[in-house]
Image (cartoon, rainbow, N blue to C red; front, side, top):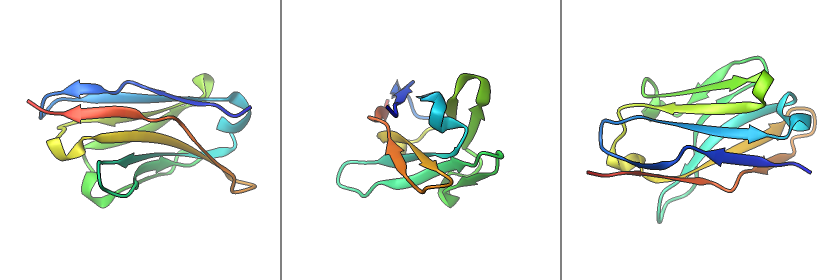
Length: 117
């Protein structure tokens, strides 16, 4: 059974940092492009960042330089380091695994990030 479990969300003041984690089932992690998405109230879900099995990264243009994605093969975990957070970063952040050879995609349950003073 595929499982993606996010953690690390919470309330942070503007300018602060958070690191999100997404632990994936070992059977899919090594074969998947891992992505982070977010969905703010009343808005569509959008790509934040993604990292391929070889470590190539891709970011939403508006987030380059503030957000950083990485993956740890030994821990089957993908991370999203978020710096200089702004109120507009408030959203539910979701982890997604897309299996390279099949295209099948799996989502985590989401973790809330709130940026407010």
